[in-house]
Amino acid sequence: MHGRIEGSLMLTWALAITGALLLLPANILPVMTVIYLGSGEPSTIISGVMQLYNAGLWGIALVVFVASIAVPAMKLMGLFLLLIQVQLRLPLLPLQSMRLYRVVSGIGRWSLLDLFMISILVALVDMGVIAQVVAGPGSTAFATVVVVTMLAARSFDPRLIWDVYDQRCFDNENPGAGNE
Amino acid sequence: MQRGADVMQRRWQRACHECDLLITDALAPPGQKLVCPRCNAVLHRNPKNSIRYTAALSLTGLLLFIPAATLPLMHFSIFAFSGESTLLNGVAALFNAGYVWLSALVLFCSVLAPLVKFLLLAFICWGSAWAFLDGPVAVAVRWYRHLKEWGMLDVYMLGVLVALIKMRDLGKMEVDVGLYCFVAMMLVANLTTLSFDPHVVWARMERRRRRARAAVAGGTQ
Ligand SMILES: [Zn+2]
Image 1 (cartoon, rainbow over the protein chains, first blue to last red):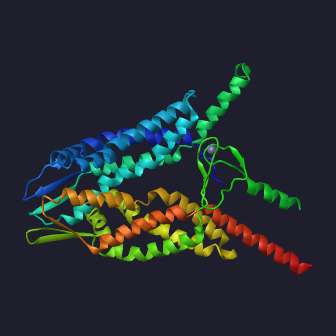
Image 2 (image 1 turned 90 degrees about the vertical axis):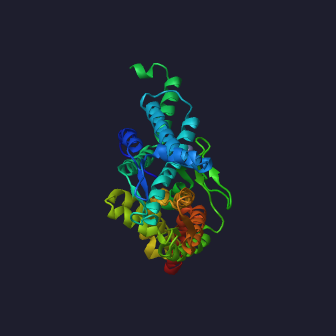
Image 3 (image 1 turned 90 degrees about the horizontal axis):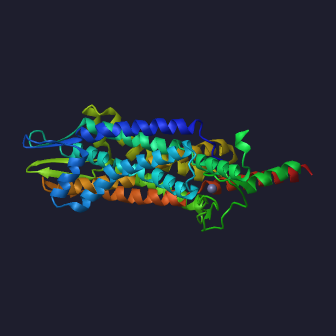
């Protein structure tokens, strides 16, 4: 069967915190620049979404917004919620936590959407002075965020939730046992 | 006899992989799925004809991989200038621009992981028929489990769509044959993931071992 993950809690904490710290450069630094006839401004993830929205492409703007901004943020929040709950042994409902765990581990991969798009455009639009797409340093930071949070979701062992639950049930059935 | 009973016990009782609840009789009837009563994890899906479908689908996927990875996915042109996109030239362009880590990630998620997934599944399905491959097949199943979520053909497909729409004001965007092969490969990859069930492989190995034991026992009498 599946073995338990060694040091799961600490590893997940470390990866989730790394991901949260990297989220800042990933959103501040430009991810790519579209240069057309010699001019072009670097765009960040957020300004890329705004450009799409302003061009009237609100459908695709929403898709990119969800994949690149909402998913990483929600994923990190979900991870921290799970971690805090296990760490402090909070009496939350285990079934809700399991649902959160499954959502968190399922959605992360969609954040790579923006990076795939950049890799396609960099090769596709490469005509020297006429038009060119160049990647920016933000893309590296963003790629690291996605990978680190995917690994964090992977390293979180859902059985920790049930350990807390079992312990609480045990404490309730045997009051005073913990005081000795 | 004692050992036989032991084996039976291990086959019929196991712990849920998400909450450690012990479950007896944890096998679903074909075409249905079994869910953990405590945490709702899917314990066993038992797709119909799992091995046969997975074997055929993974082979189809491997065949589709060749045109999808070599033919251009799309063309972009401004005036007389044009460029084309393949699965690999985006990776190469990023690598040449100095984005080594990013290009490695794109290569892994859009080319290597999907390819290795098809190869592993083809190997698991065809290889589980022979006793001497039991060890390697078990290793392949474990690898497949780790690799599963890193194959991102569907996410890449969405990236293609966003790129198509984003650049349509700048110049002329045209879809190429490679993209059709890519879409087909993506669909086959998703179907393959759905039809594969490791328990069917373990059951197949167990059946073969029991037959072999019976044959040996019959031979000595
Ligand atoms: Zn369970």
